[in-house]
Image (cartoon, rainbow over all chains, first blue to last red; front, side, top):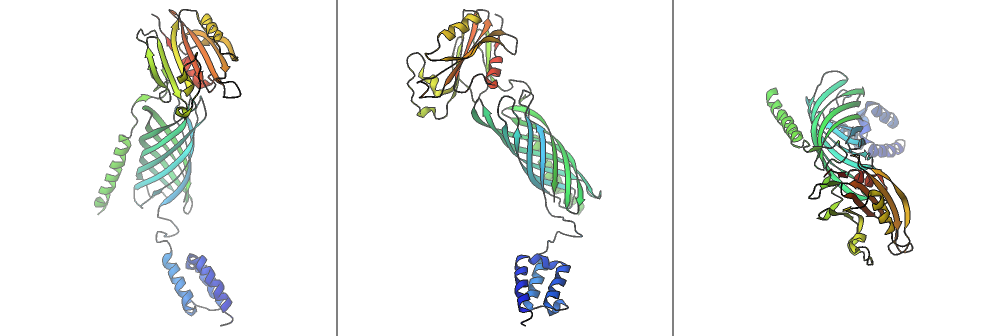
Length: 215
Length: 197
């Protein structure tokens, strides 16, 4: 008992902090080695139950190393929201994700923030959210092309004649693109979309390029 | 079974597409310089002034005279002794823009305005040629002054642009706290059109 007491304390801490790790086969072996036992049946009851609980907590969506739950992604987008003087270039970063649902249906959301150039003064701030829904093609190994409808809403905040102004931006359109699996769940993707947008009672034809990486 | 699963998915897709179409932008194209800007045109139609609303507002118009302004933030709490020469409302503004037709030539029109500079005012930009987007020629000058002396207030600027007009000159005066020589103001002045009678 004296021989395994320090090991039990140490392993108790490890089990508390990193319980899911016990679900892994190699870690099980390390535990048994540290305790000087040969099989899981010989583990102390508390530790054995912790192992069982950890195994139950393992992500159910993971199968054959491929994550089938929601994907999260970070990305960069570029488009032009014309300012009437040849500028209006938007460079933005976005955070979002989509639900693969393991079917042809693709539904995604993203939140984007960036800068819009303005010829006659300081740049504007652009913030928008985007909802996509459409088709994705499964079964092409590493590639997953898609075509979706896009709805977007946001605001452009800036100054005109040294006066702060905020204009609402709404629009809708279509996007096509593809994701490429790079390593297990890690993927990169590009998308090109056309959006007919409205802001300050003006209409904009917007072509958006999006690059993203995700898990 | 597959068909039953597909129905709600198609409904989702249809709803998404409908939402996208419903939010499609409608309106004038944003590609031109003054897209979406309002226009002031006097009854005789001899000229027109374009202004972005907001932040500009047309305060009054009578004949060839129009007053446009952008209020200063917190201007309702500011009490400035404006004196007898200039209207008090002018100093409540960030920008104050007026139009009128004068009988002098553009060069004389600018000279006359500079002769009315407040005491202590300094020339920021001497009289120079000016041309609008539509090719109307004129003269342009700017001076700087202080309402209550340099130790009391920030400077204000007055920019005068006089454009060739069939009846003499179209005088455009911008009185502002920001520098009226900045590109935004210059583009607004360049957007003024003078029409043949």
